[in-house]
Image (tube, rainbow, N blue to C red):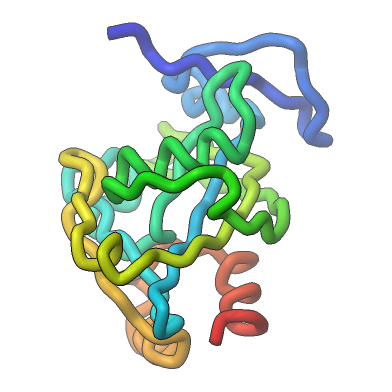
Length: 179
């Protein structure tokens, strides 16, 4: 199977004019685009995914509802729809997603062997009761799902920050906007 190709950005977020494989992107710390999607249920609880224990980075940590790279030539919203389908088993259309904001993130993981420099778009969606009850974790990506109210999340994160992937800009939005 051919490795996913990703469009490369300059550090200022403008297109660099070429694409390359995911392995090279993270070995060299090339800037690229990703998406984060926060899913809520009808009661306003937030869905967190428990990253698979076999994941290369942040294994076994609680993370955004779903997230992923934007493949070369694709759009942000199409990538968000795809990630919802792949990681949660939820079929949504672009009309079901609310664009929230763009942010940047830089991290060095796995002793410096994985460099993650990304611009990411953040979306919000609400799951129907049926969707929330029938989530399907993607093998090798997601081990489980956890629902938390905003207050539960911040209380748990305060006690055990090491159990969560750190997304300060997302968490700031949740603090100010999630109900």
